[in-house]
Structure formats: C-alpha cells, structure tokens
Amino acid sequence: MSPEASASADRYAAFRHSSFAKYWLSRFASAFATQIVSVAVGWQIYDLTRDPFDLGLVGLVQFLPALLLVLVTGAASDRFGRRLIMGTTLAIEAAAAAFLLFLTLSGLFAPLTVFATLAAFGVARAFLGPAAASLVVNLVPTETFANAVSWNASAWQIATIIGPVAGGLLYGISPVVAYTVATLLLALSAILIFAIPKPHQHTPSEKPSLETMLAGFRYIWKEKVVLGAISLDLFAVLLGGAVALLPVYARDILELGPWGLGMLRGAPGVGAILTAVWLTGHPVRDHAGIIMFVCVGLFGLFTILFGVSTVAWLSIAALALLGAADMVSVYIRETLMQLWTPDHVRGRVNAVNMVFIGASNELGEFRAGFMAALIGTVPAVVFGGVGSVAVAALWAYWFPQLRKARHLQGRV
Image (cartoon, rainbow, N blue to C red):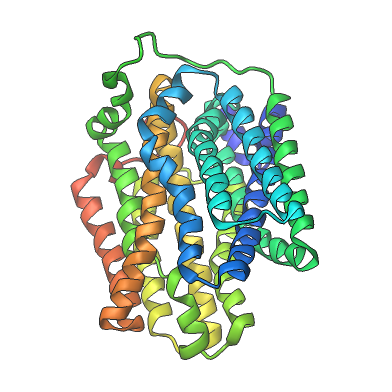
C-alpha cells in the first residue's frame, strides 16, 4: 500500500504526529474559550446596558481588526514564525480574558473599557487566524493534510456547539468563573503551541513593501482554483446563511421557544461534526471538485427545505443536513486552497480568506435580516437557498479548473 493510501485509510493519521496533536488540542481549547468569552461578555453587557445595539458592537469590534489589518497579518505570518505568532497571540488573548476577569472582580466592568479589551482581543485573533491556518500545513506530510483538515474542522465545530452551552452554565454560576475558565484554557493553548518544535517554514526573500503585502491578493486573483474556492464560500454563505433568523422560526413559525432555539442552533453543528468524523475515515479520493459543487448546491436545497418547513423535526433535520453538506464543501475547499498555495505566500492568502469568511458571516446575517424585514422571513430564507444553488452552478461553469479538481494529495 502506498504512503498516500495508507494515510487516507488511517482515521487518526494526523494524530500520529505529536506536533499536530498539540496543535489540535490548542485549537480546540482556544475556540472553546473564545465561545465562553463571547457568551459571558454578551450576557454581562446586556445586563448592564439593556441595549441590543451593544450586542452588535461586541461582534463588530472583534471583526474589524481582521479587516483593517489584512495586509499586515498575512505578511507577518509568512515572514515570521507561525508557531511564535500563534503562541504569542493566544497569550495576548489569555491576558485579555484575565483583564475582563479583573474588571468584573473590581466592579469596573463598563462598555467602553470592555469594547477596548475586545478590540485588543480582535487584533490578536486577526494575527492568529492566518498563522494558525498556515501552520497546520507545516506540521503534517502532504498525504496526511486532508485528514488534518477534517480533524481541525471538527475541533472548531465541537467547540462552537458545546462552548456557548458551557459559557452559559459557567456564567450562571458566576461571571468570575466563566472568565477564569476562559483565561486558563487560553493560557493552556499558548503553552501547547510553544511546546511544538519549531517547524520548517519557507519565508519570502524580498524586503517588506506594499507590493509584497499585496502578494496574497495578486496570487488569489491569478490562481483561479484559489480564487474560485474563496469566492465560492463568500457568496454561498452570504446568500444562504439563515442563522440570524432562527429566533424568528423558533418563536413565531415553529413555536418551539428558547429550548427549541437551542436545538435549531445546534443542528448544523451536529451534522457538521458527524460528517467531519466520517471524513477522517472516508476521505474524498476522486472528483473532489464535482463533489464540492454538489454539496454547495445541497446546502442551498436544504436551506430552502428549512425555509418552507413548518414541522419541527423536519426543520431540525434540514439544518443538520445543511451542516453536513457545508462540512464536505469546507473540507474540500480548505484542502485544495492550502495545498495549491505555496508556503511563502500562504499566510497572506489565509489572511484574505479569513476576512472573506468573516465578511460572509457578518454580511450574511445582515442580508438575511434586511430581506426578512423587506419581504418576510420565509421568502428571505428561500431566496438565500436559491441563491446558493445558483452560485454553485455559476461557479462550476466559471471555474472549470476547480470543477475538474480530482485528488486532495497535492496540487490539482
């Protein structure tokens, strides 16, 4: 059996490398801690001000640094050690969580101070994202990378499902407990990254300049496989995202109440986790591009099904299937993008990708809310699903190289 086939057949191939095991634990712990901080800050700010607008600012001040610093974060990831950047930014996030703990203990918890702290948290995350996404490629052999992607995605999905629940329970005990746990988890994440031996990394030889900072944008525009993969995610999620409207379905359409809202919010993640675990033992071996476009189309179709459903179990099932289809497309897109991109420019490409992902999520929620106010909730969700199906068809036609991609063990 060839090394590639052997790696594909081994569900835990990526964990055979101790550096990846430490990386995975760090990613899980930090994502879990971030969810706890997000829930705790949201509850505490709303308890303090009773202004829903402040809840929007909580997300905005954390997203803006990634947008404003996109030229710097990617260049730093390519020029300096990704392990060093990742460990340092996790330590800064731990310090920010510790400062939120201090503000709570001292009674100084106030909106402006909290937003400034979250902005610092956002700056750290802006540097963390490209470095973390690029580092994983340096920790495992090429033939194991697809397996590493699926496990990496499962870490994030599990954290986003149980993290908010844990955050709510910990906050229910005390905000102090919530911030203490988050601080300890982020500190542990930083320690795990620094425990990884320094991996080999190709660094650019040219001096830093505006031209080198824009190299990520130029490379994405030139390489149609990478451009197609990034823009497919942007427009599919921008049009198909319906998460912002789940409270409307839980209260007014399905009449499920708060408990039902939790079921709706968790269903896509459950579908994604089960699919990610399945992919670790059954990787995509051929026709990767076609499978990816089919799954984006299914994402749109299941969005339509959820939009028109008035039966709770069918709605939950549609969301779970939606999450499963999205997981397959994410797995293929991320693997193709990382393997297609040379190591010396990977950080800058990942920085652009992180902004696109953040923009698609943030703008997708805005699109859903705006259209719901304009034409109604159900038409807004159905329109988004139809849009995702159309995007899959158009991108399959416009990006034939991406459609014809077959294997995930190197450049297509």
